[in-house]
Length: 595
Image (cartoon, rainbow, N blue to C red; front, side, top):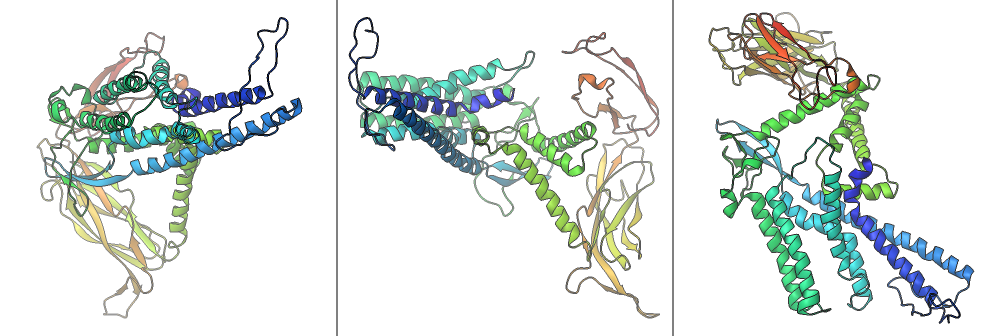
């Protein structure tokens, strides 16, 4: 399966290798024929009787004398073959260096601030380069670099006269990508699974231009001026390229007549937001909630950027949980490295990545994904070591642990924990706290609270409470924030009748606030029986798991005892003991029970 993944994107190397191997064989034939005419006698009329002159190579000259012995021929074959492999790897490495640079350019991002219809703002990042434009310009140039280099070497080496390769260098590569690669990609899809074209309009536009390119190339080489490429033909061919890119960009952005077409195939909630604006903003680009090319689902605007962030966060948590179950002996750093590698391997990648990956594996440089994941994990661990080793002995770090709290509306009060770590534990530490409104409002949903937490010498954590207001009105789950501020250390104990002297810094701060210094408290409404949902809509398990457990959540209320029936339904897997056991029954949620 790994070979099939690499196959579509190592096509250029296959082209390059096959072409250079054919040139190598032609060179051997020319060298062998240069030994003179060999007359045929008797029944050997089928043997080669002609001769061909050896031509000077672009890099390697003719090796004199031209009539070597058998031993010299073998030695020359070895030398030419080693030189061929050396040139092959050199061109591949140069092309992939160029491709890596293009990958860096096209992966640049910028921050945008999105203003939602309800007035809330969120910040996200978008690509500077449009994906379609980058694929048709820089990516196409970089991925075709070996073929372009071959064509340039041949044309410049033969005085701008087409040689044995000619236009077939580019045409063959394009045909291979268009027919063979697409055919293999369709063939290797597992039975019962489907794949969809991400941008159908762009596919139609580029496919039409690809077919037109074959027709146009045939016309200028065989009809208009057979065997000669005239200046006007070259200029017109070059002009077609920006027209093709422009039409593909119009199709991708749904401009002109495309905006009147049906948008059914663009309602995938996992797609990203496509935004195109001009102008600057101190912190990015501020935009209204109704954005051009936003995705709609059943007539409503879907806030995709928030969902994508939450989904990616949940996906990473799920990956870590699965890896922890599969590898309980691994430590956290190893699990993070494995999770990074898993996430990187399942991300959408450009053609440039696969080309670079193939070259690195061919030249023995190893798997770029594993190296990147290992470097990121090592960097994170080294940074944590630096931040824990250096300041921990001198500076007390203050933060919430945990930073997220949930409570029912009728709980009365919620307890929050402030933790002190490191520094001089023999000193008294003070830190202020204050509640801030979120979707929950002070006085209506919770009691406004502010004060100071005092951590006496030797104390590493302290709790304080925030009152929760109960009512009989059904409402959605709401949240508010508690923020820490103004941390300081009591430096020395003064005499009686004098206020304590508080000092926070001389050469260095004695105590600092670190993340998370803001806690989020979610109030679960209990004035409703609740809304019952699965924790995950999709769960992947192995056949050998035996028994699978599914977690059901109760949100938007937890009042009273509720019985929820459940049963299994066949999908692609068959019940009745074939793939799974038919199961049905009832779950009973007690009062205030949420899981």
